[in-house]
Length: 306
Length: 306
Image (cartoon, rainbow over all chains, first blue to last red; front, side, top):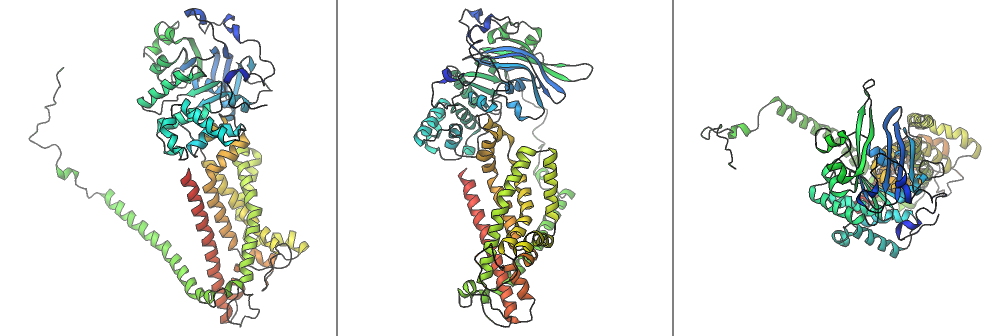
């Protein structure tokens, strides 16, 4: 496939996939009890990027997550909250097939990305991950220079020209609000930066390949409140360009930054004592935190359990 | 709001006195000093033989190496043992050539093998077999390896430097595989995941992230293997023969190497030959030392750049 760099985002994203037209616009018409209709606030419904249908994930014989149905919409911030072990991260890692790395992991149900079944035989996880980037819980820059960290993705995608790379690096570092802090030391090691800077570098590295979606797995849990605030501000700015999905343990963070919130919880099977995560409620963040439909959600967001 | 002052502790009786903070004469402290002393002793025990060895070799070998200076490195080896004076050129060139050829054979193969074991094979049956065979190979005595190459190669193609290189490569291979695999295992998975999340294929990730991250460790492991191979004597007797003239062609005709010269010269009754054995020993140590230091400097510089 052709590599467009630097492109103006999403228009070209569906092209490499064979069947992609249907399913975008009127996803809201389909009845989906777990997600609140977008028209609640009288806003135009945004296009669906991901549609999860009865998603379940097994690790070996053990079912980690079951029955997750939701629509994730374009240019919104979607937050996944819930107690530890409820499968938030597992579900997130299904969206760019990062669970493929774990040999025993098996995915059931369907994950549709612009209507394409991500686990279909013709989908390459590598191509998918160029469009669906990821930022991890712990900042994980490569042991290379700041410049090389950001240029890594574009280089892998075939950008050769030095001046193009320079442009992408600057643009990405600006996009991650890091440029002014590091512009004089681009050639120095990324490992010498503070934790917050490293995490913003990881965001810069993710946006350097111009993805459509960025998955963030507890991106602030290793950071102090000031660095967290910077990243939250950054997420608000990034929303116009990208679709963000964030897993967080911090309910205030979900309430502050996200447009929609999915609440997951753990169900214990009384016979086998096995724990399985499941989606309880998915709605506008305001609704989840002020007037949730499910009692378990209310208990969780008010701090009475979990 | 009033600040509650805790008055339960009266100020006239000091709660903590200096005596409380003074170091205690406890069994724990005694044990600590005892262990420190033991460790110092262990260091001395290791240090004494090394110093004695270097001192002996230098004092007995330096004379002949530096007698009419470049002669030792350029002249042919005297044919008759009772001849006095320098000349070890053919063995120096032979050692360098044979060890280099062995490294070219063993290092790429060993690194690729380790990449297979750690990145692809993992715990699969075939990988287990390869791993087991490699540890068996580590335990094969070098003289047996020489005999093996003698049977499968030398009997058919005659004595040559290449035969010696084959035997040395067989000895190096398991060392390179084992140490490289250890180093690859130390590369944290989050670096691999970071690379995958940018849409990088597995092979590309190994080439651009995993191997560079493990590079310094791999270099150390390969050096260990080279140093070991450079000092091997037994396998060379079967495979390269022993000559006194320089043979720059590794692929045909008998050759010679420093360890072989040390062995054959040391076992004569002539003082001239014995002196040459000491000189050859000094040269061998110097060559190994030179390569080790060079590689350390290079890897340290690479690590510093990160």
